[in-house]
Length: 330
Image 1: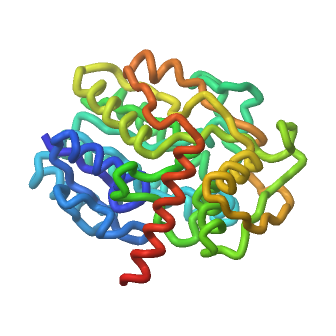
Image 2: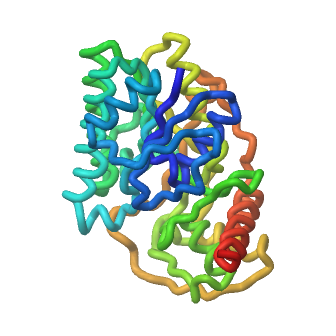
């Protein structure tokens, strides 16, 4: 059985490909390399350069490689960009996911794991937020992901097709073995941005909003290590292969940190100070969102291995220094 990983040359996708190949799985990566990198694909995986919306190409991959599961990461993820370009996000995240599902159904692929997001909850007003909370996205990004979840549910009801949607909270860190990390230029992830500021790659960074009803006025988020997230996908794959029903799970640690607390952690871990400018709130940002994770722990048997903000920050910073040396050598 072979697993198709879409967006597998990107940040989370490359860690998923590593997790799968480490577990002895056969892996094909489909990526258009718009934001991904060839070097991020594990040597044991097969890379196909192309678009997930190309149903003919996906059909050929399914037939040629005997694909029995798809783990779908490909898409756009920047919340403010989705506010200014909603149609672009609905096309890239929703329309293309529909095409991928159609190819999966036509090719008889029984299992599908989807990279969803906590943004489907909007500003839930409860902590931690559970999977059965009201879904009210605050941005086109969140809505584009929710629409895909709805399509998955309808597809599973009509075909021999089961899925798991994993609602990510804030993904951070890097592979503990130093094989991959967040490498996308102009990335917007907080820990990535702060680490770039600590290395001097950025002159400084901005904090968007200091008047939220939180511990220090800055947004509060639940940060999950990217390798723990990859392991959650592997647990979901085993769950589906065992014949279990389609379901949705949160992926986080049930613990929140404010933007200011994360910046302080980066400064402490790196021993470096950097400029932080305070700015107005951004559209689409909820004040606080923290995951309830009892469901994924109990149903999938998932347990985190890297649940420490200081280690997450340290590994993210080590990857930034690796990138700096890589570019010098290149």
